[in-house]
Length: 211
Ligand SMILES: C[S@@+](CC[C@H](N)C(=O)[O-])C[C@H]1O[C@@H](n2cnc3c(N)ncnc32)[C@H](O)[C@@H]1O
Image (cartoon, rainbow, N blue to C red):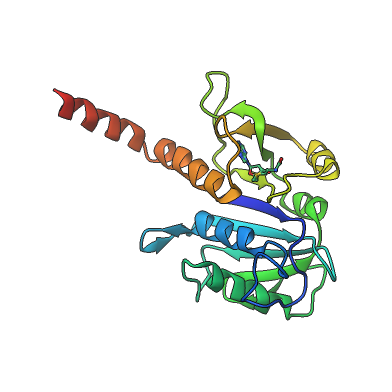
């Protein structure tokens, strides 16, 4: 299982207009792109992925939406589609436990601390100044990783403090600051190449072609 937590500091916590995701919905467009990057393959879904969106905007924060790749239905690879499932979840009564709003989409009341406590996994925090995942010293991404990424505002001091309360590492995917969804694609790629040994296959083919 690969899990991604993305924090939406301004993301709306009540049903919002699908016509204004970047504005009145509080940069919900960023979170929707993260859902797509985490879950979609070409013509398929990554069934072994869970995405957690922490919504911290007005009027009723914090809330967490979970997309579970194993069960999700009615999701297509466009921002509006993910947004409409989030919107539907926000229409549900929110409690301190998960309530399913649509297949594979659930909502609960909670913040980063509640979620990390529930998941109880080592946290891999994505930050531009972290240890490069391609550096020699990096031990490699774990088999059941739990990544935390920020939105356009990054992570707050409080969130970083919460993460430090758990076993954690701070990693970078490269030398420049990227959008969170682009980081997710790069992380998947690193894991895909390791998990399936495809790095070796591609390298081998490349060498064969060069001969
Ligand atoms: C658009 S960036 C945040 C930029 C924000 N202005 C800041 O200063 O933190 C969104 C998120 O993507 C992740 N990120 C962006 N570039 C990264 C990199 N090179 N390595 C690791 N994580 C990165 C971080 O989690 C960051 O919070």
